Image 1 (cartoon, helix red, strand yellow):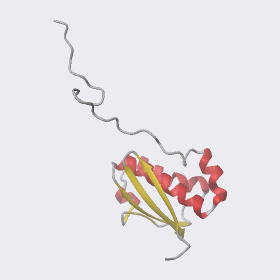
Image 2 (cartoon, rainbow, N blue to C red; image 1 turned 135 degrees about the horizontal axis):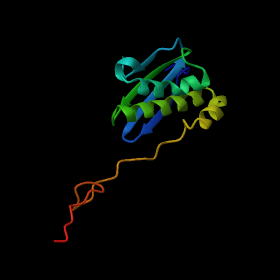
Image 3 (cartoon, rainbow, N blue to C red; image 1 turned 90 degrees about the horizontal axis):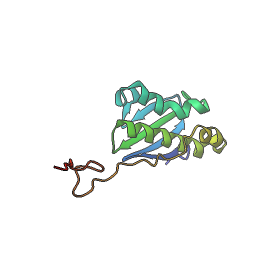
Image 4 (cartoon, rainbow, N blue to C red; image 1 turned 180 degrees about the vertical axis):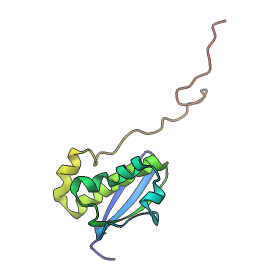
Length: 130
């Protein structure tokens, strides 16, 4: 195993992204596919690239991601956090810039569970007085 790799794990909702960073020419693969192929919407692509843009390393590091669980929005958020964490392991001096942008904070929002006797988490049966 080469020691030039930096690893980072990102999570959001039920999505998990394991990110591997190494110095390179800007290659970005998510589950062995290009970012444009895996995340067709521009907002997802912008979210994935946000960590690299802030520290000015886009095109200078290769990023390899294994994303699973959840949907594409959750996975994009998980990849963003994973890249930020891997960047800190690569260069601890980048922490203040990433922290200021809120890229190191785990989004705590999760799906609320369905309750028994109800249609969903909050949805109840319709009430009629008469």
